[in-house]
Length: 157
Image (cartoon, rainbow, N blue to C red; front, top):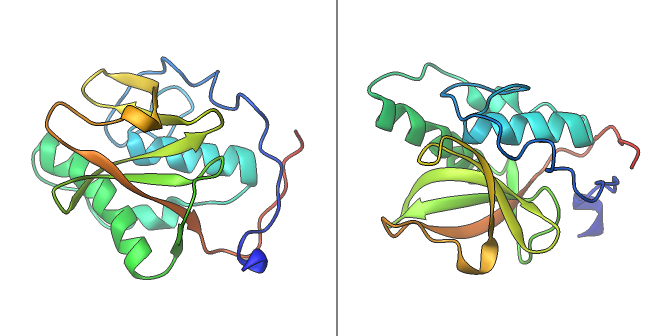
């Protein structure tokens, strides 16, 4: 199992420069992010892994449908085994938020039990405690995932 998780160093506090950045649909940084764009940006910066191919296809329809599609791409990648499920989160693990059984949002795990995500409702990148993350609409974190790619460029701490 250890071979599935190539080692790389994630610096403590990687998220500090991102907190408060504005939310913008289809944005992948560095100045604004949607939820998947934040995941793409952080993985590229911290691990040298390009996750943009998972954003394949056209996003169409009203804003609500477009935003949810970002999370659906992530769920599809999990189903296709491009991501593997983790029993416990680790820094940069991708968390999927679901409403009932449907994926609606994604974010990243940060040390100290924090969920870092670009939130449309607040209009910015924020961090919330994993232990009590639940939206007013009843959506909740349902799992942590890791890219199944085996070649990562290591970033220095």
